[in-house]
Image (cartoon, rainbow, N blue to C red; front, side, top):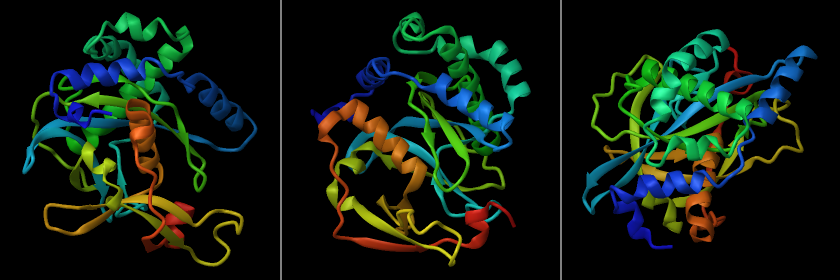
Length: 280
């Protein structure tokens, strides 16, 4: 792959949008599974997140970066790096999707009709719903104006194994700078260059340590991760759902050019009982 594409400000959004339009979207199937689980008494949660891209200048010139959040000590998964987003509020988000979704989808680099024509009406409506869900949460968390984005497309769902939760990811671009207004749930915003994911030296394996009895013994406790450094030089660990969503996104746009995470470097991380159970 020609990695200079990440520095092509005007071409990259269209390239991403075109690639995303070629993949099947499983929102309908996953949403039905969640609804059926609720009927059977097995509570499942649905969450929309927005994978934000922005074109930034850095020491190497300028390139596209992912805008991610680091969760504060006010939330149970404190310290985790994630996409802005959160739980679906069905009634509120449905009303907002009727009012706002078409205007936001119309910002796609290519014709929105090309995107929607490849999905049935139920999938289209669910993309609209979770797009609004993710942008509402992003506005609450970091002050993102939903009209200061370009919608690039949807990614397949990602279901967590540790929690009964399915994530519906949408990809958006922030074409204009904006001032972050962080809620109490967000410690800071991290901007990670897309090119960082193509440097094999940035990868490691994360060994999760948990209190006895809180994770089934057949669960894997080694997870691929990306090691990054913030503006203060502190090492941050990107792992779990957000890591996998980004790797899936990059696999779609870059194919086999994406490195295989290294197993030669192992980082340890202890999870508290509160983290695992989701309760204080």
